[in-house]
Amino acid sequence: MSALVATLGCSLMMVLALAAVAWYAASSGKSSGDGDEVAALRAEIVELRQDQADASSDESLPRR
Image (cartoon, rainbow, N blue to C red; front, side, top):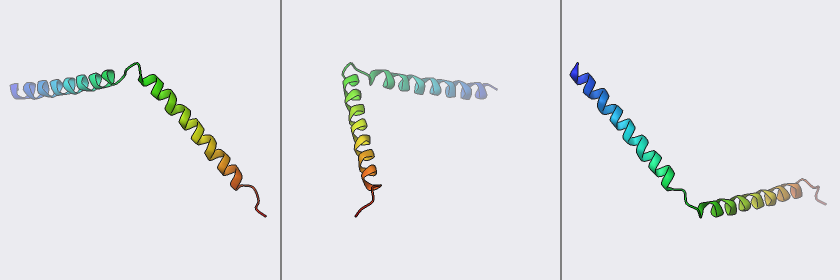
């Protein structure tokens, strides 16, 4: 019985340790400069999608 309790306790501690590492990694990865980078990447994505939409509309026109 004590082996079962020890195994469950060890498993619980491992889950808690992994959760703590994941929480630390998620919280430490964010800085004040990340917002500017995210905004720049979003603007670039919008521009690329617009270019793609323009290219696909050009392809749908009949060629002579």
